[in-house]
Every structure is written in C-alpha cells, then in structure tokens.
Length: 427
Image (cartoon, rainbow, N blue to C red; front, side, top):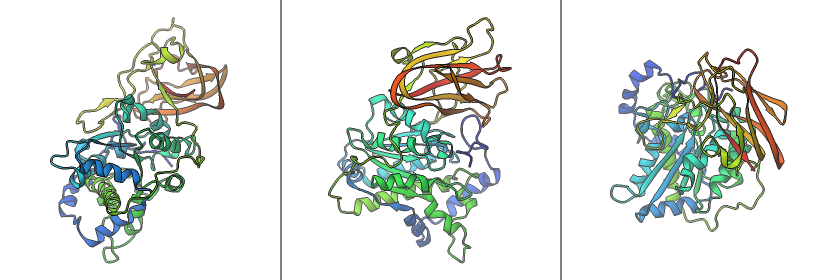
C-alpha cells in the first residue's frame, strides 16, 4: 500500500484536483443534511473508543472558564487540509478547532489557539522528529489537546509502529499532561492502518475516532438501504476528503468532545508506568539540522555546502500562506567537481534517521550512505517523484556509541543534486 497520496500530490503536497468533484462539491455541501438522523448515526459510529476522559475534561473546563487552551494537530496531508478549499479554513483541523470554540469557549473564543502541523506524504517516522519543532514550538507551546492522524500514512514506517507509539508517548508524557486523541482517516479503497495502530490507543486508554468505522459499511449501501454519504461526496480524490468530508471529520471529533463533556469524570489519569506495546525507542528523538549541528555533531559538508530553497511547503496553523519545511539543510549541487565529494558526520547516538528531499526533477540523483565505513542504504529521491520530506532509518541500536556517517552521490550520479534536510537522533 502506498503512503499518503504519493501518486496524486503535487510539489506542494496538495492533491491534484479532480475536476468533476470540484464542480459538484459546493452543491454537495449546501444540499447535505448534517442534522438528519442517518447522519448523526454514522457520526456516532466514529467513536471507536471513548478512552480516559480526565485530560480532555480538564481542557474543556479550562475553555469554559475563559482560560487559554491550545489544540494541536499532527499528521499527513489530510491534517494539512488536502482536498479542502480554502485549505487553511476548511480543513478538518481548523473546523474542529472552530467547533471546540463554539462548544466551550466564551465570547469570541480568542483564548483558544490552533496548532496545525500536517505535512503531506509523511509518516509518524517523520512526525516524531517534527513534533518538538512544529507542535511544541521548541518549548514555547504546551498543547492541552493533541490529535494524531497517521492512519493512512504509516505503511512506509520502517519501525512498524514503534515511531507511532513513541510519538503518542512523547505527547502523552509531557509535564502539562495534554489529552491525546488518535484519529483514523481512511482512503477511498476503505484502507487504513487502524488494526495496527488502535491497539496503542487501547493500551493507554486513549480517545479514538475512526472515519473507517463511520463510513465504510454505509458506503456499500444504497440510499434505500440507509446510505447517507457516497464516496463521490466524501472523497476529493482517492486519498483526501472533500470540504464535506473534512466537515464530517470535524463533526466526528466534535461528537467525541460532546460525549466527554456529558460524561462523569474518570477517577484516575492514564497509566504511563506500563511497558510499551510496540516500542518507545524514539520518544527522545531530536532534530539535527544546519541550525544546531555544530552543537551536537562534527560535520564536514564537502560538496553538500549549499542550501536548498525549493522545499516541500505547508500551510501551518491557520495561515493562508505556505511555510517551507526543513529550510536549514545541506545540498549537493553537483556543480563543483574539485570539492571533496562526501558529507561526513561524527555523532554519538544509538538511533539515527536521515531526512532527505524527494523530487520529481531530473536534476536530482541517488546518494549512497555508509555508517562506520559500511554501506547501509541508498537514498533515491525519485521514489515518489514529487517534492517531499523523506525519513529513512540508518542506525537502531540499544546503546549509545560514536558513529561516522558518510553520504556521497552514487556512481553516474556525481553531477546530480541531493539535499539532506536533516537528521533525527536519539542519544
């Protein structure tokens, strides 16, 4: 199974429009009955697990009292808002944040802050590296609620759920004890990774919302049998929701909030003393890029001394403009044959992931990666043929030791470009 929308996304990580849906979509929205009993029934089916409510109820009570509340979202292109127009105001993330304000916040809801950190075509393997920078603002933000949406992105997660559980624990174990909600989106072919990921939610008794549970069975029905929404109405393309679909996702999250608000407070908080279900090896992962490299590593950049400005972009938070992701990078242009070729890094760590740029341009070529003098991986930027941030696992050991990483262009690719966006390391 391909990961998030790799065949239909353009260089900005947004979906290629499907024109017939674009024409019909406004009609779908205006004519759709969001208050019908059938619609409310399928929204009710989205509540996969109510989970422990202590932290969600705390956030709700803060909002009711007019105290600041931060709602954060991290995920793939669906969290970014792909398929929604305009993307910054019609994504499920913005709509559910807006719904939270309407439900609980007094006056204009200015005490509620949105943090949206969706990035197209990327799994939790990258999300766990981005979390501190893109969600926590490198320590300046403390979310009260964190919604994690990687159910259709994690097919390419090399750790098979370890990074996902690590991300969950990274959020859940923060000192301010935020509520963590797991959201499972779904593709048009009825597929997601809910079977792999939902046991993590059950393990920690987390609230979970599933669009697969809400939609798939009724997709198979005729109108006479109780169909409420068709795939054509819900999906903008084979991966992303329409505006109507994003609204349904927001309504599903709103239903969870309503159920929690009406429930009695659970007696105890989450039990985080239990061992992990899949693994927690990447909870302490940190981002290393050109900005902080000199503080943690010894680097000889060789021919990778340039900076790439043509990067994957995303509309973060409630912004109507796109922000370049991983701007503090190392780029090989292939234009200086006299330079030392390889990028060399010496770093003490026990786990290491490289983040490199995928590209659809013929100017980019394949790089070879050695660790401690041994070839370990080949990084091909044309695997998906659009501009994307690509995470790849290089080192996964039990103990910290000194490692030497060397990256050089593959044979017959010496005159090609390659961009190292950064690294995620655990020391």
